[in-house]
Length: 168
Image (cartoon, rainbow, N blue to C red; front, side, top):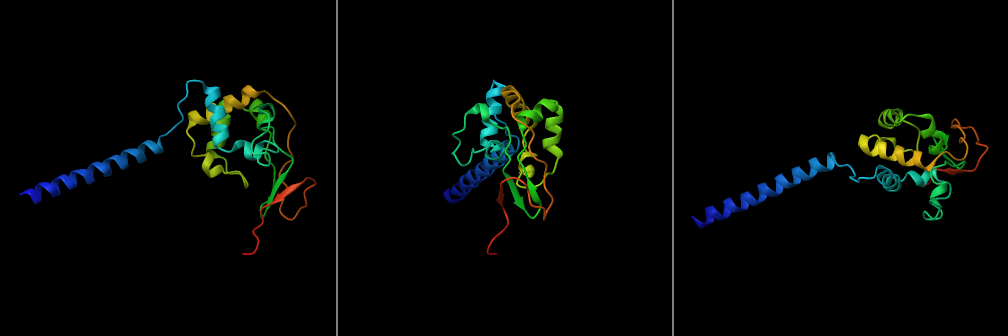
């Protein structure tokens, strides 16, 4: 009898653990950052999503020691690979041209050239994308438009980082 109770208790513990894991997975799939201030939330989301890594000139090389007033204004240093050469756009000008709804729709549906992680960005919750938009817009416009992408095999007129695989 005690053996039967022990097995029953063990099964209950296992079932409870599985239920908790399922609940945690469901919560992770619907997770969004909850902050009352949308601008602060957008700032946080832009940082942890890595927006500055490409869209802020010098951000990676200085370990993020770029004044916030210079953030997200794009860079003329391109990323070159088999797709050609792409440039991180000036998001501070972009949000002046697009409505918040256009921003969300674009980030949810557009597939762009590397190294933009569109497959990750498209998974973000709409409320998080709206917060990023509001944060970038709060920074105000600055800078200029960045170069358009350059086709494969065409040498860019700007500095670029090579993302061609080596020693495969």
